[in-house]
Image 1 (cartoon, rainbow, N blue to C red):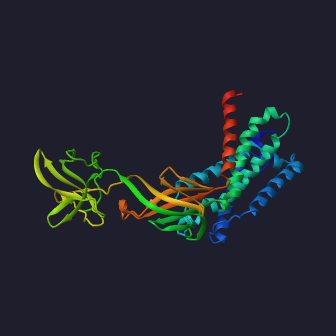
Image 2: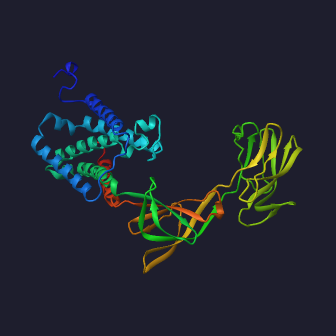
Image 3: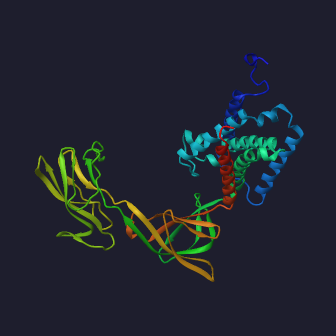
Length: 406
């Protein structure tokens, strides 16, 4: 056949038809989103999602057996169909990672296009169906003897199939809840992002919250705009006794630094009481000549923030110390006869049954004296299947790497 005279939508379809089709699916998804009032898709829960997934899989197998020689089914298992469906799916995944996802209804183009809730949007659902269908027909096409020749191809594709199946069908089983723990108070409920509460299969009580802070920093800011100077990279240097840096035309020297102070009518004094704050005595020089000096502090619950004015344009302030690490000492109870005491910190979650508990946040207004710790509780029963798919992908990819371009 003369490819130069080939008409659009003439079989066998190529990349052009594939990308037109996937773009059309995205537009259809947007139209359904608009007609449905931009409501998020809610997949059915157990056991209906299993029945639905099994039914779709069986249907695809039957279609393959009956119509595997048809031009459409052949195209769906072809490289152009795979590439075009993967491109749309990947674009939506990238958008999901780059655009903040939220369930609270908002306005604007991002919300209209469903980009603030991609995982529960119609374009993502149609994209997943397209990729799942193409992947299924591709696997069925190669699922034949000699299996030894096709084993690593099948490992790759079956691994990806398992991941997509588990993520799609198991979406309704995944729970992502927040638990607000108050010191010496037992908590047994979790809340989702729509403020719906769930009774948890365990209880948690906050015994203590601790936080380690980085030293505060010097910040030179504009008196008129209130913005920190970013012209000089030496700005925002860590505060410590006897440290000094030249910023713009001034040399800023730290003569004294007290990590925790309170204040009275006579000035600042060292104190570790609740509500204290760091303070530093700063001297400013210009051409080795002292032009001003004084105390600065970032402020706290019981200490007012204080800055030092250099001239009409600039002043020196102390930034609020940033947390280096924080953790919560808790006691949890699974039933009346089993309890344990442990600590949870960022990147070191606690596993309770099928749940993983992560240190999420705290009362930032009170900072290191917070009596509230916010935990994130995640349950994903399909995670082992996703891991199995990943290992299958890794096995197939390792073999492909081993045999090289052959």
